[in-house]
Structure formats: C-alpha cells, structure tokens
Length: 316
Ligand SMILES: [Fe+2]
Image 1 (cartoon, protein in one colour):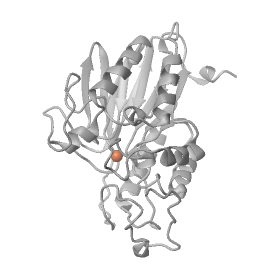
Image 2: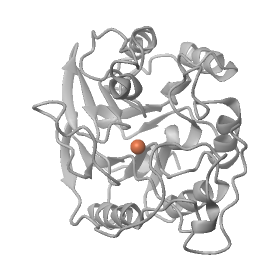
Image 3: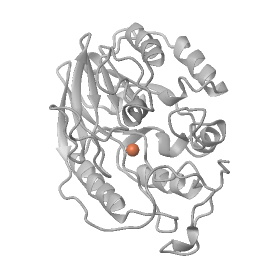
Image 4: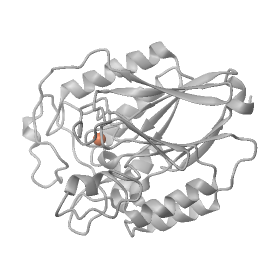
C-alpha cells in the first residue's frame, strides 16, 4: 500500500522540538525535562495526529551518549503514528565556530547517522489538495565548511519541484534568522545568543533560494525555544516552542516561550496551525551544568543511577 493511502482526506500533523530527554546515568540530568516530554507525548497520543515531526534537540547529550539517541529513537518508534526526525545541536554539535570545541563536526554527524540514518529527507503525505511535501535538513551543516556541508548542498540542488503538491513544509533546527529575514550576521562578541540562534545571512539566502524554487509554503524551526510566526514572501515561518524549558520570552512583543508543541490541520486544501501548551509543567529538580560542556571535564561520578553513561565520541 502506498503510504499516502493511509492518510484520510483531512488529516493532521504535530511538530515538536527541543524535548531534551536526558538520563539519570549522566553527568547532568533534569528530570523535569523528561517529565515534560512524557506530558507532551501523552497529549500527542490523545490528539492522534497522522504524522509527528521532531525538529531536533531530542536529547540532552545525544552527541556523546549513544544510549540517549537509542532511547529516544525507541520511544518515538513506540508511538502509534509515524515520526520524521532531524537532529539538533545536542545531537550533532553547535553552530560552527573555529573556537568552539563542541561545534558541529564529522564525528558527531556520523554518530547520529549510525543510530537515526540520514539527517536529510523529503517525503510526500496525503492526497490531492491535501497533499503535503515535507523536507527536513540539518541546516547547521551550512557554513560549517565540513565535507557534510558539500554533501548537503549537492543533495539540496538535486531536489526537484513536486508537481501537483500544493504545500511544502520544511523543518530545520536553527531558525532562518534571529529577529528578521534581512538581518546581517550578528557578531558573537556583541550578541552571542542571536548569532547562535539563526543561520548566517549567506547560508540563509542560499537555503531560501532553494526553498523558494521548490515551492516552500512553511518553514518550521526549533532551537530558540520561543514561539513566533512571521510571514516572508507569503511563506509562513513558524518558530516553534520547546517542551523542555523556555528561552527568549522577552525578545519580541509577539514571542511566547510557553512550553508546548504545534499542531497542523490539513483540510480542504489549507494548512491551519495551533499552539498546544503542555497540560502541566514539571517542577522536578536535577543536577549538573547547563550549556554544552565538552567531554573533558565532565564528572560522571555524580550520576543518580549506575552505571554511569560512557561518552562514546571523544570531542576533543
Ligand atoms: Fe534546544
């Protein structure tokens, strides 16, 4: 059976990101983030979407803990609906920078690929006016100078428009831009967070040209952990909320960092969207440092459960 045949005439999909599921066998752990994911997961099951998109940062430290990647992969595979997944920086490294020991690199990328398979995919779901193309990519490869950036560009440039498909939803982990589409590159020395949240201008314009040539209608990104909708050239740009923890809630008057996920309804040739807040927010308290610490210097002796995880990728 063609997978499109499984989709009803009107159907729905959910986008969830920045769930950051961690392990009590790690050098750091926030049980509230795991509990929030369980809340979101229950709500998603209750809503019964036909498809789940997972927009990266599935884990706390999946870049260096294979068990975290395998655990969330199993968890997603036990859901009653199909999931399509892209990695976030907690799986494959931060936005590229010459000075960061935990920037995106080929070791992290291969580690993710060994568990989840390709970071990039394009797929068709639904029929007729309710047919939707979904394309997911690891956008932080752009600007990295890694061999995987050249591979991604070759892959993108080989994509062709899909005839008779009125909707094309792209999912990426970092935002296309921090504040507005035409912004110049932020200097990390002035505003490191804004620099870190979005793509650099050259990479944004490159990707936008490809997206436009392929009939983009929606771009949904994670990473910022604050919800906002902006329209650019008739394309809906959705910055998605997180389920784990909020960020940047005071950056924009129209931003909202309430935890939750996005639900999209595909009906009568249109895609509608709504925000679904978490039913409850966990107040459990954990341990360990924030940020993106390299393996060197982590203290696994503080893990709540034994045996502690072993980092399998030496990040330097
Ligand atoms: Fe995140």
